[in-house]
Amino acid sequence: MSVETRPLRKNGNRIVVAVCLAFFTGMVGMAYAAVPLYKMFCQVTGYGGTTQRAEKQYAGRVLDRDITIRFDANTNGIPWQFEPVARSVTIKIGETTQAHYSATNKFDRPITGRASFNVQPEMAGAYFNKVECFCFTDTTLKPGETLDMPVVFYVDPDIVNVPELKDLKTITLSYTMFPVEKRQPVASSAPAAGKNSNKVPESEASLGG
Image 1 (cartoon, rainbow, N blue to C red):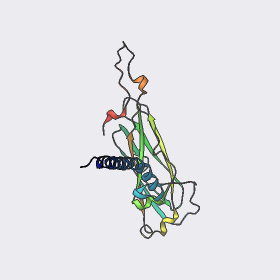
Image 2: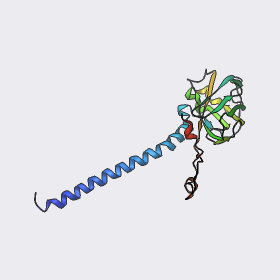
Image 3: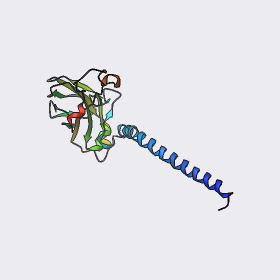
Image 4: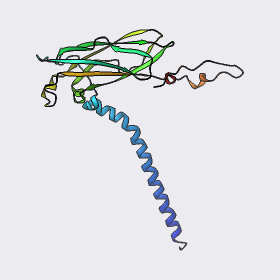
């Protein structure tokens, strides 16, 4: 290899490395962006049974047709008793309705929880409009405390225009409650020098799943 060609090869290697690093950085950025973008996509389209957030409290019209809404509740790693007050309700399509869930902390210290949700069948998510909901809101319950958690919703009358959903009789609204970890600030997490502290940080992560 001549001396003249060595700098050219080194420059070529640098270009390859730079391109690889740029590609890797771009992929990492896309991975982080994918989560909020996917969530936004689900909220707009109802994909995966994601319900819609209604900008108005009423559908504008109510059809003379009944539909039954079933309510489901689950917990994942949180010591709460979480359940719907009523298992189902039959309403008119387009009618604004309020349902209630109940949560009780069965643990011996305050616990913070957050609920995720979906509807079945999944296609109905685009037409299930929630006016008010406790989902994705952190809620802290003291030991033994019980909280009423309402959800206000209506089924968009346009659901009857969808061939796959026009004869739908039942929609299931399902919530799953998860623990939310509360970390102490770094400055206050360690004991002061020369002092002993046996205080256990409050963290729902220790509850397991």
